[in-house]
Image (cartoon, rainbow, N blue to C red; front, side):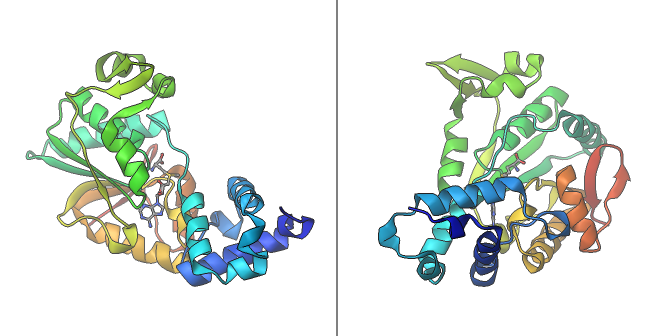
Length: 262
Ligand SMILES: C[S@@+](CC[C@H](N)C(=O)[O-])C[C@H]1O[C@@H](n2cnc3c(N)ncnc32)[C@H](O)[C@@H]1O
Protein backbone atom coordinates (compact mmCIF):
# COMPACT_ATOMS: atom_id res chain seq x y z
CA UNK A 1 0.00 0.00 0.00
CA UNK A 2 1.28 3.46 -0.73
CA UNK A 3 0.03 6.82 0.37
CA UNK A 4 0.23 10.05 -1.61
CA UNK A 5 3.06 11.41 0.53
CA UNK A 6 5.35 8.55 -0.60
CA UNK A 7 5.08 9.67 -4.21
CA UNK A 8 5.94 13.25 -3.36
CA UNK A 9 9.22 14.49 -4.93
CA UNK A 10 10.40 15.46 -1.43
CA UNK A 11 10.05 11.81 -0.38
CA UNK A 12 11.95 10.65 -3.46
CA UNK A 13 14.72 13.08 -2.44
CA UNK A 14 14.65 11.73 1.11
CA UNK A 15 15.05 8.13 -0.11
CA UNK A 16 17.88 9.11 -2.47
CA UNK A 17 19.68 10.98 0.32
CA UNK A 18 19.42 7.94 2.59
CA UNK A 19 20.74 5.62 -0.16
CA UNK A 20 23.64 8.00 -0.67
CA UNK A 21 24.40 8.40 3.04
CA UNK A 22 24.07 4.71 4.02
CA UNK A 23 25.35 2.94 0.91
CA UNK A 24 27.20 5.56 -1.15
CA UNK A 25 24.75 4.98 -4.00
CA UNK A 26 24.14 8.07 -6.10
CA UNK A 27 21.41 8.18 -8.70
CA UNK A 28 21.59 11.72 -9.94
CA UNK A 29 22.36 12.84 -13.45
CA UNK A 30 24.17 15.97 -14.61
CA UNK A 31 23.59 19.02 -12.44
CA UNK A 32 22.18 16.83 -9.65
CA UNK A 33 18.88 16.24 -11.48
CA UNK A 34 17.10 12.96 -10.73
CA UNK A 35 16.41 11.10 -14.02
CA UNK A 36 12.77 10.19 -14.72
CA UNK A 37 13.49 6.45 -14.80
CA UNK A 38 14.94 6.64 -11.28
CA UNK A 39 11.78 8.34 -9.98
CA UNK A 40 9.60 5.77 -11.79
CA UNK A 41 11.52 2.76 -10.43
CA UNK A 42 11.73 4.16 -6.94
CA UNK A 43 8.01 4.83 -6.92
CA UNK A 44 7.29 1.27 -8.14
CA UNK A 45 9.60 -0.26 -5.53
CA UNK A 46 8.00 1.74 -2.73
CA UNK A 47 4.51 0.85 -3.95
CA UNK A 48 5.36 -2.86 -4.06
CA UNK A 49 6.74 -3.02 -0.50
CA UNK A 50 4.23 -4.92 1.69
CA UNK A 51 2.74 -3.09 4.67
CA UNK A 52 4.46 -5.66 6.95
CA UNK A 53 7.75 -3.91 6.16
CA UNK A 54 6.52 -0.92 8.14
CA UNK A 55 6.22 2.74 7.29
CA UNK A 56 8.60 4.33 4.85
CA UNK A 57 10.37 6.09 7.73
CA UNK A 58 10.98 2.67 9.38
CA UNK A 59 12.17 1.13 6.12
CA UNK A 60 14.61 3.96 5.56
CA UNK A 61 16.36 2.95 8.79
CA UNK A 62 16.57 -0.69 7.64
CA UNK A 63 19.88 -1.20 5.80
CA UNK A 64 18.71 -4.52 4.38
CA UNK A 65 15.67 -2.88 2.76
CA UNK A 66 17.85 -0.07 1.47
CA UNK A 67 20.31 -2.58 -0.03
CA UNK A 68 17.44 -4.43 -1.79
CA UNK A 69 16.17 -1.13 -3.10
CA UNK A 70 19.63 -0.19 -4.38
CA UNK A 71 19.89 -3.55 -6.18
CA UNK A 72 16.55 -3.03 -7.90
CA UNK A 73 17.56 0.42 -9.03
CA UNK A 74 20.95 -0.71 -10.27
CA UNK A 75 19.87 -3.41 -12.71
CA UNK A 76 19.57 -1.12 -15.64
CA UNK A 77 18.63 -1.14 -19.23
CA UNK A 78 21.05 -2.45 -21.81
CA UNK A 79 21.00 -3.75 -25.37
CA UNK A 80 23.27 -5.08 -28.10
CA UNK A 81 25.14 -2.43 -30.10
CA UNK A 82 23.80 0.44 -27.99
CA UNK A 83 24.80 3.78 -29.60
CA UNK A 84 25.99 2.48 -33.03
CA UNK A 85 27.98 5.64 -33.84
CA UNK A 86 30.08 5.15 -30.74
CA UNK A 87 30.72 1.49 -31.67
CA UNK A 88 31.90 2.58 -35.14
CA UNK A 89 34.33 5.09 -33.60
CA UNK A 90 35.47 2.44 -31.14
CA UNK A 91 36.19 0.03 -34.01
CA UNK A 92 38.54 2.58 -35.64
CA UNK A 93 40.28 3.24 -32.35
CA UNK A 94 40.72 -0.48 -31.64
CA UNK A 95 42.24 -1.08 -35.08
CA UNK A 96 44.80 1.65 -34.44
CA UNK A 97 45.53 0.27 -31.02
CA UNK A 98 45.90 -3.28 -32.38
CA UNK A 99 48.57 -2.07 -34.82
CA UNK A 100 50.94 -1.93 -31.83
CA UNK A 101 50.85 -5.75 -31.80
CA UNK A 102 50.05 -8.17 -28.98
CA UNK A 103 46.73 -9.23 -27.55
CA UNK A 104 44.29 -6.47 -26.66
CA UNK A 105 42.80 -6.54 -23.15
CA UNK A 106 39.28 -5.16 -23.21
CA UNK A 107 36.99 -4.71 -20.22
CA UNK A 108 33.27 -3.99 -20.15
CA UNK A 109 32.73 -2.62 -16.63
CA UNK A 110 29.13 -2.65 -15.42
CA UNK A 111 28.19 -5.00 -18.26
CA UNK A 112 24.75 -5.88 -16.90
CA UNK A 113 23.46 -9.01 -18.70
CA UNK A 114 26.35 -9.01 -21.17
CA UNK A 115 24.93 -7.46 -24.35
CA UNK A 116 27.67 -4.79 -24.30
CA UNK A 117 30.43 -7.37 -23.73
CA UNK A 118 29.18 -9.65 -26.51
CA UNK A 119 28.93 -6.62 -28.81
CA UNK A 120 32.58 -5.92 -28.06
CA UNK A 121 33.46 -9.55 -28.84
CA UNK A 122 31.51 -9.28 -32.13
CA UNK A 123 33.30 -6.06 -33.05
CA UNK A 124 36.69 -7.70 -32.45
CA UNK A 125 35.67 -10.72 -34.54
CA UNK A 126 34.52 -8.44 -37.36
CA UNK A 127 37.83 -6.60 -37.33
CA UNK A 128 39.87 -9.79 -36.91
CA UNK A 129 41.46 -8.50 -33.70
CA UNK A 130 43.34 -10.65 -31.24
CA UNK A 131 41.60 -9.67 -28.01
CA UNK A 132 40.65 -10.86 -24.56
CA UNK A 133 37.18 -9.59 -23.66
CA UNK A 134 35.96 -9.53 -20.05
CA UNK A 135 32.67 -8.31 -18.57
CA UNK A 136 32.14 -7.46 -14.91
CA UNK A 137 29.06 -6.49 -12.93
CA UNK A 138 28.11 -6.51 -9.29
CA UNK A 139 24.88 -8.35 -10.04
CA UNK A 140 25.25 -12.16 -9.86
CA UNK A 141 22.00 -12.88 -11.77
CA UNK A 142 23.05 -10.44 -14.54
CA UNK A 143 26.42 -12.20 -14.89
CA UNK A 144 24.71 -15.62 -14.99
CA UNK A 145 22.53 -14.42 -17.86
CA UNK A 146 25.63 -13.13 -19.68
CA UNK A 147 27.38 -16.48 -19.24
CA UNK A 148 24.33 -18.39 -20.47
CA UNK A 149 24.73 -16.68 -23.89
CA UNK A 150 20.94 -16.80 -24.24
CA UNK A 151 18.72 -13.76 -24.73
CA UNK A 152 15.06 -13.20 -25.56
CA UNK A 153 14.18 -13.44 -29.24
CA UNK A 154 14.04 -9.97 -30.73
CA UNK A 155 16.91 -8.60 -28.64
CA UNK A 156 19.24 -9.22 -31.61
CA UNK A 157 17.35 -6.68 -33.72
CA UNK A 158 19.58 -3.80 -32.62
CA UNK A 159 22.61 -5.56 -34.17
CA UNK A 160 23.73 -4.78 -37.73
CA UNK A 161 22.27 -7.36 -40.16
CA UNK A 162 25.71 -8.79 -40.99
CA UNK A 163 26.52 -9.34 -37.30
CA UNK A 164 23.11 -10.95 -36.74
CA UNK A 165 23.85 -13.41 -39.50
CA UNK A 166 27.32 -14.26 -38.22
CA UNK A 167 27.19 -14.12 -34.43
CA UNK A 168 23.73 -15.08 -33.20
CA UNK A 169 21.36 -17.96 -33.85
CA UNK A 170 17.68 -18.36 -33.05
CA UNK A 171 17.21 -21.58 -31.08
CA UNK A 172 14.11 -22.70 -29.19
CA UNK A 173 12.63 -19.22 -29.32
CA UNK A 174 15.76 -17.63 -27.85
CA UNK A 175 18.80 -15.87 -29.27
CA UNK A 176 22.09 -17.68 -28.69
CA UNK A 177 25.55 -16.17 -29.05
CA UNK A 178 27.79 -18.09 -31.49
CA UNK A 179 30.30 -20.42 -29.86
CA UNK A 180 33.04 -18.86 -32.03
CA UNK A 181 32.88 -15.77 -29.76
CA UNK A 182 34.71 -15.79 -26.46
CA UNK A 183 34.23 -13.53 -23.45
CA UNK A 184 34.54 -14.16 -19.74
CA UNK A 185 32.37 -12.72 -17.01
CA UNK A 186 33.09 -11.97 -13.36
CA UNK A 187 30.89 -10.78 -10.51
CA UNK A 188 32.76 -7.77 -9.18
CA UNK A 189 31.87 -4.48 -7.54
CA UNK A 190 33.48 -1.53 -9.27
CA UNK A 191 34.20 0.01 -5.88
CA UNK A 192 36.97 -2.66 -5.73
CA UNK A 193 38.41 -1.28 -8.95
CA UNK A 194 38.84 -3.16 -12.24
CA UNK A 195 40.20 -6.73 -12.22
CA UNK A 196 44.01 -6.84 -11.90
CA UNK A 197 46.19 -6.31 -14.93
CA UNK A 198 46.34 -3.35 -17.22
CA UNK A 199 43.68 -2.76 -19.86
CA UNK A 200 43.80 -1.28 -23.34
CA UNK A 201 40.15 -0.31 -23.13
CA UNK A 202 37.65 -0.01 -20.31
CA UNK A 203 34.07 0.58 -21.38
CA UNK A 204 32.08 1.96 -18.49
CA UNK A 205 28.82 3.12 -19.98
CA UNK A 206 25.69 4.19 -18.12
CA UNK A 207 27.13 2.97 -14.81
CA UNK A 208 28.59 6.07 -13.15
CA UNK A 209 25.12 7.39 -12.47
CA UNK A 210 24.90 4.76 -9.72
CA UNK A 211 27.59 6.40 -7.62
CA UNK A 212 27.51 9.48 -5.45
CA UNK A 213 30.13 12.11 -6.41
CA UNK A 214 32.84 10.77 -4.08
CA UNK A 215 32.17 7.22 -5.33
CA UNK A 216 32.35 8.36 -8.97
CA UNK A 217 35.69 10.07 -8.39
CA UNK A 218 37.08 6.97 -6.72
CA UNK A 219 35.77 4.56 -9.35
CA UNK A 220 36.98 6.73 -12.26
CA UNK A 221 40.43 7.15 -10.66
CA UNK A 222 40.70 3.36 -10.20
CA UNK A 223 39.58 2.69 -13.77
CA UNK A 224 42.09 5.22 -15.16
CA UNK A 225 44.82 3.62 -13.03
CA UNK A 226 43.86 0.25 -14.55
CA UNK A 227 44.66 1.42 -18.10
CA UNK A 228 47.85 0.73 -20.01
CA UNK A 229 49.73 3.72 -21.34
CA UNK A 230 47.57 5.23 -24.12
CA UNK A 231 44.61 3.05 -23.09
CA UNK A 232 41.11 4.53 -23.07
CA UNK A 233 38.25 4.74 -20.62
CA UNK A 234 35.11 5.08 -22.73
CA UNK A 235 31.87 6.24 -21.16
CA UNK A 236 28.40 6.91 -22.55
CA UNK A 237 27.74 10.34 -23.98
CA UNK A 238 25.29 10.95 -21.15
CA UNK A 239 28.07 10.33 -18.58
CA UNK A 240 30.32 13.03 -19.98
CA UNK A 241 28.65 16.07 -18.40
CA UNK A 242 28.89 14.46 -14.99
CA UNK A 243 32.58 13.72 -15.45
CA UNK A 244 33.23 17.25 -16.66
CA UNK A 245 31.65 18.47 -13.42
CA UNK A 246 34.29 16.40 -11.62
CA UNK A 247 37.01 18.18 -13.59
CA UNK A 248 37.71 15.45 -16.15
CA UNK A 249 37.99 16.40 -19.82
CA UNK A 250 37.42 13.76 -22.49
CA UNK A 251 39.84 13.42 -25.39
CA UNK A 252 38.51 15.25 -28.43
CA UNK A 253 37.97 12.16 -30.56
CA UNK A 254 34.87 12.29 -32.75
CA UNK A 255 31.93 10.26 -31.48
CA UNK A 256 33.94 8.60 -28.73
CA UNK A 257 33.48 9.86 -25.16
CA UNK A 258 36.93 8.76 -24.15
CA UNK A 259 39.34 9.62 -21.36
CA UNK A 260 42.84 8.49 -22.23
CA UNK A 261 45.54 7.31 -19.89
CA UNK A 262 48.78 9.18 -20.44
C1 LIG B 1 22.34 0.69 -17.03
S1 LIG B 1 23.28 -0.78 -16.86
C2 LIG B 1 24.48 -0.43 -18.11
C3 LIG B 1 24.82 -1.64 -18.90
C4 LIG B 1 25.78 -1.37 -20.07
N1 LIG B 1 27.03 -0.82 -19.61
C5 LIG B 1 25.16 -0.46 -21.10
O1 LIG B 1 25.51 0.71 -21.17
O2 LIG B 1 24.26 -0.91 -21.81
C6 LIG B 1 24.18 -0.46 -15.37
C7 LIG B 1 24.87 -1.68 -14.79
O3 LIG B 1 25.81 -1.20 -13.83
C8 LIG B 1 25.89 -2.16 -12.81
N2 LIG B 1 26.46 -1.55 -11.59
C9 LIG B 1 25.93 -0.58 -10.81
N3 LIG B 1 26.74 -0.32 -9.76
C10 LIG B 1 27.80 -1.16 -9.90
C11 LIG B 1 28.97 -1.39 -9.13
N4 LIG B 1 29.20 -0.73 -7.98
N5 LIG B 1 29.85 -2.32 -9.55
C12 LIG B 1 29.64 -3.04 -10.70
N6 LIG B 1 28.52 -2.87 -11.46
C13 LIG B 1 27.63 -1.94 -11.07
C14 LIG B 1 24.44 -2.60 -12.61
O4 LIG B 1 24.35 -3.85 -11.95
C15 LIG B 1 23.92 -2.62 -14.06
O5 LIG B 1 24.01 -3.92 -14.58
